[in-house]
Length: 378
Image 1 (tube, rainbow, N blue to C red):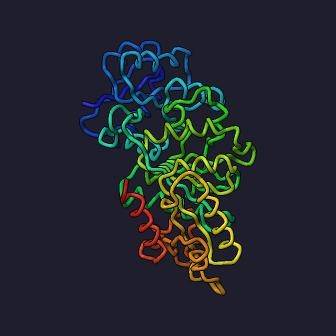
Image 2: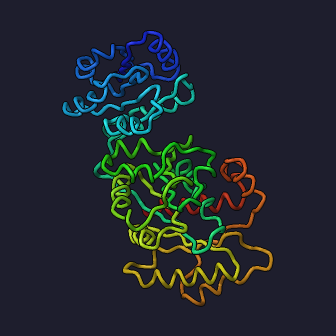
Image 3: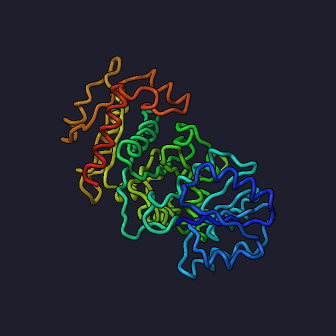
């Protein structure tokens, strides 16, 4: 028997939530309602799998409930309903153990997504608590030159891994203020990696998870800083290490968009990566940049066997022979991604994935092949 606890002093709130929950919960799920002032006793005795907390009239005692349950070795998912607008209060709730938030009026799609995530079959162990045995495979996508398609490749690769291989995938968009993974997937982030770093004193998995942006495919995104936030610098190296450490324990695969990243941070994520996709187009500037980047990678203390060179938009009109890269570096090109301008533009403009638009296109098939390569040795 799975138990969900709804904590609220507002009967109309409980009635509204019950009407929505009843559409999506499994038959063996029991929903229990209790008053805010008397939540501790039923919560500790019933050992709920998740707790929906009414935040519209939240007393300070709400913040202590997760701590008290954790002391009893209970780790339910805490979901706030009616999130406060004040960011500092939201951060306080996240630190207290709240995993997610639902808006009021309730959105049935949001509630369904939350309920789907709460199904025990999709978790190992307690909800919201990463497995100590998991160690994600880290893949960094990078190009020394902008505008070659790194973001589009990374976004679609994440979906291919989730849909075709049922992998739990997180995309870390580290490209400073020019990364656009969330836009490419038609999402608007509430929080970014800068919010996580600026509140580093609260950093644990519950806090980090609440700052992730979910995609309907199951992929999660740690968004790049927005235009009003500071970009990541080498001063943030320790914070980035801490973030990746937590993500490795919770996900199967970490995809990193490292375009234009600070050189110190880029060197760290590449050294920490199991695979590096070095991306370029078949033109003079790109090939020159690829050769220079690869030669720098050879000087770092790790094997270049993990570097997979991708030539995007091939063939292109008046292209330069990509084999010049192989002749200059003695390193083979792993993949040629077909040039399909119209498909890519439609994907970017609509927020759809390449596979949603045309799964049988040559470009979609190549993205799926890249996903196969990643999971091959996982």
